[in-house]
Length: 428
Image 1 (tube, rainbow, N blue to C red):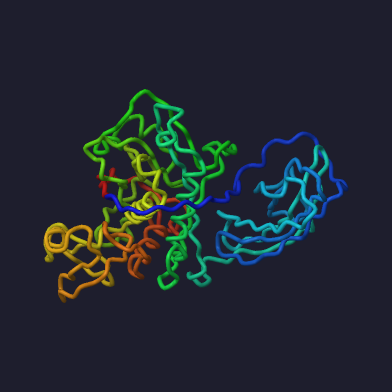
Image 2: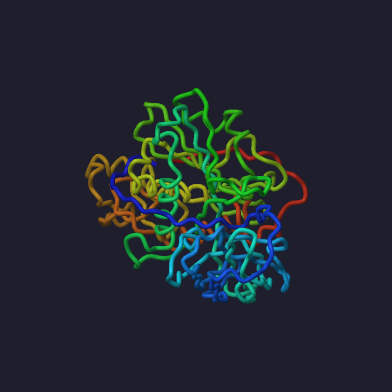
């Protein structure tokens, strides 16, 4: 995506989730003088749940606090299947501290047992165990939340340079803003919630908790890269984590010839048994990894402008999930984005008639003027949301396609035999 200017900064609150509980010294349950409430289930879907409660550390410094989940009713911290840590309650306080945790990547139609905990040294205090059941796949699809784990591959040559070696809080802020764009709480509530959420993956590929959730730092001597060849580099392919389990996002210094480009993405695929217009299809990548670095690439120079970076990240995620631009560069006779509810316009005609600083667009068919509000447009636009057809298209890719994490139904349509590799396609 090309440059779109604005400024914002939002600090993201990150919970560590979905990992194997880290090895702990021998600890025993006991009274440590703190209050740990039962869990309240605020809501749950097929693959996630929102939990709340209260912890009062009675003015003591806690070693650790969080929540444990298991599919077994009676369990200890050693037997927990999912562990979340909550950082905000370990500092001494006399007050009840409200706790809210979103638990992701759960199994559909499954009963879980959950309890909060607080630990001081080798003593642990549990709250009351509560159970809940996730929804089944056959229930209302409107309740599906697509929780998508993200890994940022931060490539840099200068450790002190915060534009290249991007601080974790800046990346978390970008994810937080992008999530608000996806769930329609960023600028307006008049649009549609895509029910897609990004979160920093808490574990590495071996299941061990990362020191910085969702971030893998790579230092080398090369200062800049050509965006046109970056994805095909052997080093990029080697850096890629399994794209069926996580979204790979590379941040690096684009070559100066691409100074106006904020990001680019490989567009999504679909399967041979359930294709969709405009996307290449095939079943090869259910059984083998692509021979290139499939994912999203972001120019690190734009991290200083959080809103610009986040809007571009949301735009590139749209490409990653099968969306095209709302405009065409080839005249109005070209089917541009395969969505009937987005108005098409000729980008070259627009720039000549209005200039890129104008938000008005002239629709190809009716020649009516429209204000640009779609995330799959380019600058200048007042980015407010995605259309229903665009959201349905992204959900189709999530439910049916390879190289995307968190798809709920694709296992039913996977091909047993490997197909031929599918030619890749990049969009900005």
